[in-house]
Length: 143
Image (cartoon, rainbow, N blue to C red):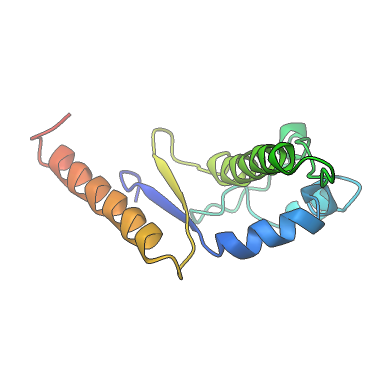
């Protein structure tokens, strides 16, 4: 388990994008929203069997930019949304990364939409490549 890479699939990209347009992450991931109280019920690590508890750090609270529709400029609105979306995905990925209790374990995050065949093929190609590299490292062929 300690040498196994972790693959995080964030599926339903299309639904997340829709929801992000109307509901800011601050509704879920701030102390005011009860994030700390909720998070304290989970072990320090969501990806191993340890039973330690961890008080969530300030950086685990959403402080990114919330999306607000720019009515008079479609191009500016598109750029603004893409920035908010990237910040949101990075934040959620980071929540998994900080709970990685195994030093040196790699986490590979893929944002997917199962109805987008090319997107799913690309994600699985990356996973296959990662598995092959990991196996080559284990047998000493690659460092």
